[in-house]
Length: 637
Image (cartoon, rainbow, N blue to C red; front, side):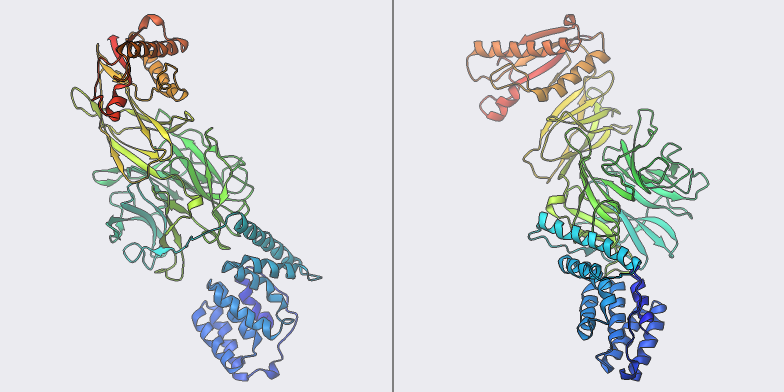
């Protein structure tokens, strides 16, 4: 009879050899009959009915060890780890020798409820047994490694006042079908997800948020949903592109390919295959766009990888095509499987799943961040209870850096996988992110101008985002807080636009609306170089100014007939003579920099105006700051 009990351990992919038999002559016969019937129900996946019969059997004979063991196994299958552990402990208390083969599943359920220290103690006891079956030993060693990782992680990542309490998004989003792969534009007002309809067909649905309430989800409008499966989608941060996975399609390159659809006035466009550089004869899936839509991250099983499934990135070229994908390398990819990449709105933080990096078992979720050199750092496990002994799936983090969304089949799900939200633990959060949106237009005609918009970290000189506006000049760009940025807009035939955002000490609590007039290149047209910085009362150019000055160099190289004047201005603090000298010296410093970069001196004039041309009131510090400036003025076209 004990051999039949081991059926429930198989649910956990473990196999045990029976070492003893209950003496059935001492077990209540009606309890045995209930037990036998419960096994038939469990075979048919009727677990709740099986539980009821096992509880009746134990009620008739509270020393019926096999009934306890089978009941514990079913609770474990249902992920009711607390009940499973307490039931195993009742069986062990009745007969420690008889139940010794069940210490392995007992330890798994201990780990399932987060008691990793006790699980490690139990698994060490299992491995100390002589003549252990090779299969059991292999399973126990795997679990021992995971439990040890969990114990060590808890010591190095103490969690204080963090409550992991995922909230089901409710009937408006979730249904009796499966819902998964949540994503949303940066404003957080639209949730897009995959729903498996009629247990087979996958379509895209969306729910709009009004206040704190999600409206009833509906299919995405347009031609994106078809009779074929569409899944594993990611909507761009501006809400205008949607990339997803389609399998076994007539236009496919292989088993599963990556497709793209565009938002139009009539809904979402038909899907376009991304072509034979992104897609291969093998499996490509789970795409994610960077916030500027210039990078496409995805999982692939193509030849040449480091393991089963690796994470790759392709870059959008000026031609509108995607580059040859790059493997993210051994710092992220392993001989195992890496999948579900998600790049946050800060464009510096990526979350992904892996079963090849140290963790709790199955697939765990990890976070990895870009350094100042633009290279990815070392992945960090998100820790328990976000990661568990089960397989963890995709994760989406909102722009605030703390609101997380994922799919799970928790006990309160409406049916299978549902979408939940929870607050991400503080030490694994990405940067809080603001965003700027607006329109680039001609300062004379007010016509929208398709233009290049670039965001640069002034400290590292690293380009954080670079995007192209739409055809009418509209744009959206993200601003991770905690840094200072140069914000540049360029279009041929116009003076470039320059601004800066100092966000080192600002909270992510607002949206910037920034409409940008570009001036046509003409005589006397001028711009303020807002990212040009000098030492106080000196003409030494700060290193963070090089980003701005290199834009001036590029402008002069793109327009070889243009002659400019660099104009220095100060506030009215101090003597007029000193201010004049300082403004002239600063203008010369800029000219000298441009000459060192290969610009001919005959195209450059330096002129200081001191405090004679204020643009704001010198009575306030804010006004004086505006008056301390360097301007570029066109002298000849």
